[in-house]
Length: 441
Image (cartoon, rainbow, N blue to C red; front, side, top):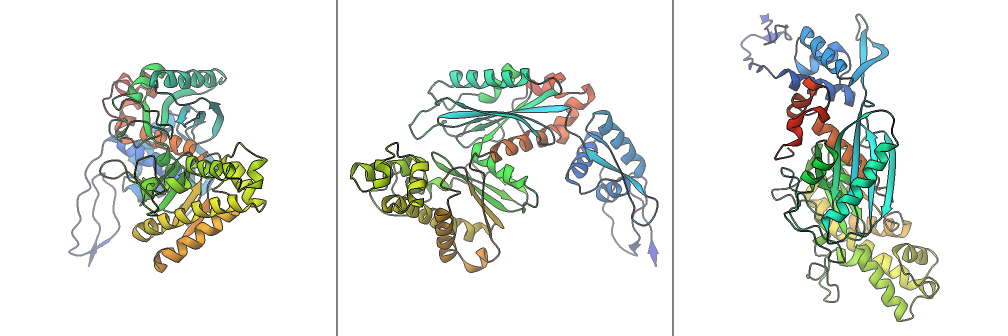
């Protein structure tokens, strides 16, 4: 014998076998339901009323009300398509993001980036500004804010809904503050208690979220079409960093420092002293500062004909020199690639990601570096952990950090708690409670 049960919202569930225990589905806050419907529509997992009812276990009347609420917020619209599962064709809904704008600011050692995007992730403008990181956080933040305001002044449509910031240090995801002083390879340091989230909230008058640039690149990698649920993104810059996506979510660790691949020891060579003071860290081989130091050493010793003609001895010069057959430059590239391969072999064996992306510099896209890294990784990692591994190259200009920051702010704005704050008044900018929050999550 089979029987039909009723859900909390009054709709009929699928037939269940006699004796099956049905756990009650607790009533949810309406804005939590709207949040989930927005997520399903945006990701394409469910886009019609029947699909949304199946995915959420909400009754169709409730689905209609929540769709109406999302439509009134200008977050969804009918796509014009119909979809049928054998019966009457149902209207297909699509996410729309043009009403809300997100400003992005990411820090670098000698430059910063400001970008503007809409909620759909469409990049409207991006600027990279040469500006050396200084020990005065107010000077740096003021300069970034000025550039943000200049970008906004060029836009005639859309309302600013939020700001996403990328820091050169691990970030406490609750407070938005750095867990370690912002520092560069030149040892410029910011006070640990500087509250960059509060500063930008007051300046821009919208809610602000902060994350490390490495984690933002991982989030950006996870936004790529077909991205797996488990991936590692290695960010190559003045220093090396990485971010971890596990089960489709950013993994920050108990103390917010997960992904600090830069200080994995890959050698016991006493000559390889890292900026942290220890010996043999990955950064002492593959960080741009280390590569450029090796290049200048080779130049001073007269071991590189190519660098003699390119005395700036930058990473780009080293990569080009290796490509031309210069022995000293080739050795530098090989050392960096082998060190990266040794570090990733340990990480991949332990974490077993489906994809590893390495990007952010000329070195990451260099064929010699990539092939040596791949060979070292596969030789040193557990065979089963690399059998199906996808080793990919990220963008040289690190644009993934922009898309990751957009995803961070968008997901926060559309989360149940935050949505419940601003949806009744129509815009995050009009919700004073979002500007006075002590925490960002």
